[in-house]
Image 1 (cartoon, rainbow, N blue to C red):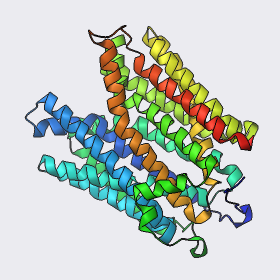
Image 2: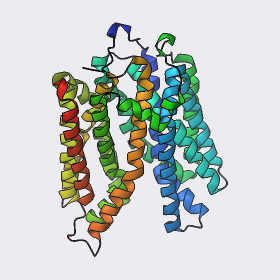
Image 3: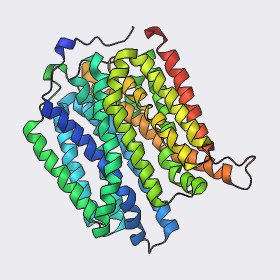
Image 4: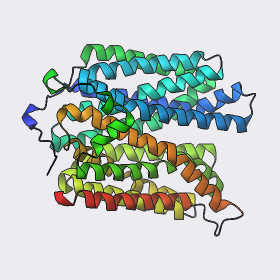
Length: 414
């Protein structure tokens, strides 16, 4: 395949088991960072705006936007830095940076300081791309899909544990969850200083260039190969579809099914559990049997089917049937990661992951407006037809579009 980087499996360094576990824990803590604030941050913001819920909602939306913007700007920067100086310093600094963020948010005396904390969180969480580059460094190309899936278990675990931990600790003190998370991040950083080896040897590093470290410049890498460009575009539409869940799920479940907070929380936990099972146990065997390309297609088809069930389900019990179907969507993410890492050189893995994270950040900037406005329109008085499931139908259509794009982009690989 033209432009595809040839990677000698024998040249791939092998990481110690403790190093891979450290990367897993780092990603888990990053997801805890997101999960913990779900039940806590809105309450903190309300306290700063005299318990004005409407104003708090606007501020919370602004916080989400600035977090995604920091991801968009700094993911390629940290990816390029890791290509130049190695993965280890970037991953370790992100742990200490995340610990600092929690401390800032725990002590924040004003809304402005809380805002600064969210900016720090967006910057330090941008190191997720470097963690994936680390995994690509130490894993042979044919084993990457399975390894990405296993590491991806951290996302499901964080999605389950974060809100639960934040809720329990928040009942004691609204600031306590941030102190606990800060302590865990700091301890993990210290542990990493002792056990985390560097995955990118000096001879495989590349010079740092601002033209490739800025978000626009980083995207040039994604256009350097036809297959990579197509997979990146498919990833954008898939990530855009995913935004429907955090954007309208709670509103949809409350409006259509009359679910309580406990029912919403239990459903989110089920989503995380199914995702963990697929990421940890199913991806490896399925990819080994089908190959990355067919696993990618199967994942997108299951995701679209899951969204169709979500949108059409007339009851909460039928909605739950769609969750395990939706979980199989995780196949596509791991397969795409495995395919794209084979298309760039070893000294470009950080840049690749940074550019991919920037693409995801753009979807997180666009998605909330797209899906909330769609939901509001189809339940409003002026709707041509009352269709509360419209956002999920739209998300399913986006996944089918991603499927077509990925099919065409990988046609030479079949």
